[in-house]
Image (cartoon, rainbow, N blue to C red; front, side, top):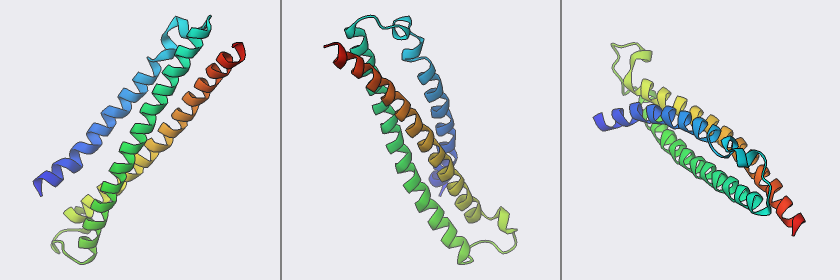
Length: 143
């Protein structure tokens, strides 16, 4: 039980740190390099296209991580929600204070956050892949 409580508390903290890192990583990646702002040779365009494709792969991996977390949150939400519905909670407490209700609600909230992250990662991956496609187009047209 204590391990479950810790995991429920630590997961949102870790997610918030990851979100801030993703935002900083994306801002400090290829766009900050002066060569990236004005690629001059075909090799520069190829290098940029590969770099953007690698960044997109990273985003896709992060999407998969979030999908795994959503499955975990669904399991927790269902388990704690069923216990609360069956009346397996202390009757002397208010429903909002009940542990099962709290954990079911927390799991649903975390699921919503993960879904929002997935949407932002997908949008970012699309943008990055379109950048890569533009650079590959320049490479193919110049050959």
